Length: 144
Image (cartoon, rainbow, N blue to C red):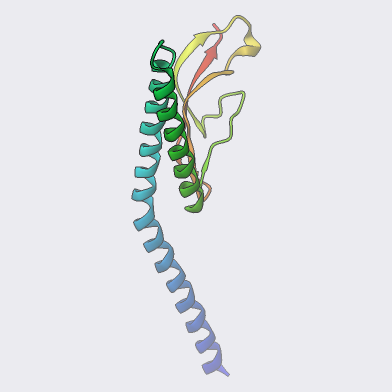
């Protein structure tokens, strides 16, 4: 039954081609949008940090803290949208992993075992479908 074997092979290749096409379209349409959402996340977080500093000033605490609460709710909603697109934040780690982190500056380490320890997370990193969208930006310790 060469004909049925050929038909099975054709059907299999056709299904694989359709799957490839759908994945390609899915990625080519979603990836730029996801990058834009990540940048929006950065801008909203920066604004939230600025509001936190201003809210420490006397006389501005009430109104500014309300704005900050509203902004935090917007950031939370944005994170939920990212999760629906299968975008995950990189989990916090104690040590640098070059696959996930970009060190933007170093602080001196007093001991060799502190080398590579993360001091501060500056910008969150994101993964999409198991692939790195943006590395997490960190400040780390360096010995010597």
